[in-house]
Length: 433
Ligand code: GLV
Ligand code: MN
Ligand code: MN
Image (cartoon, rainbow, N blue to C red; front, top):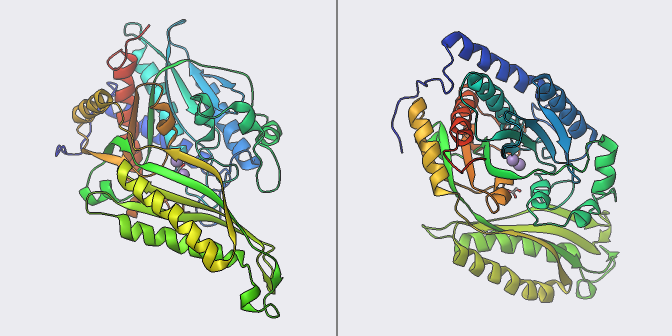
């Protein structure tokens, strides 16, 4: 970990007045962006394909078009803001997502999209008199990173990287039966654009405490945690909560509850000092959910994560072993539906070295971190060289209206992304065109 002090140099040769102006512009745009879908608790609710998501996308389009970008959409609603510097050369892309969880924070994803746009704008100004860059620049607002209204998460980048078929995704429904296709058409942000990307950069809030605990302003992400997510359906039989004797019950809610508790026990049992196991149930829907009715069915999503492939595989096997015991105990049947799985995998080491050198040059403190959360870079790193950066989250709070990243940390991240972009666009990471 670097111990350089936190007085930053300018990544793009700006004097202090220009730096102040760039910082003010970023923070003003961040405040404007945060008004879309704003909640009374200080967060945002911009689930994918909703009116609030559409308004944020349109605001972003207006912002970047005002700076000379061209905006395009692909078939799954990924929003591309293109800054052509040299006709015909390939694109370096940066991005994240403007959609949010219900009652989510203002920073998750949105910070990274805005930081990318500002880094591109700053770099273009700095390049004005310099030699021709090796790449053009695209800023991507990925559709439905959060995966709350439509599962799975990281949907737009999964289609872009060929991990999910577009037709399957467009036919995916939310709990009310609205398809992704209908939702995208209702907000009018869909097209047929395609882009070849040579390298990908993403900056995001950490959503954990490690940077704050170590007093660092930047995290260089060295790898993802592995994650296995399963949709389970517990089938029971609807009955009277009073009149039906216990021996006759097939209580889906009891079975689902045992599954939730089993997931937590597995986290406790399989975590080691070296490799933690983290499990959760984030979604739980009871049918018919009525006071005097034994539940006939519960849909739930169980999520297991670990840094180590073997530890995750062992925890996963235990979860599935316990399913049989729970079926017997609650006298229900448990069906396993869709799954969403990604492996623990490293980011490009040369990209981390490039970002470390950039942080050193700017005098920013940094360390290496692993990402527990999924990001669009989780998908992108599997097809192109990728650099993933973090800025601190106060108290690690995330997926919560109280999520907070301090202004100075957001601005340090934009400085670093600008410097990393300068190096990448100059051909220091991948060969240019
Ligand atoms: C995001 O998609 C996550 O599951 O962390
Ligand atoms: Mn995110
Ligand atoms: Mn999120």
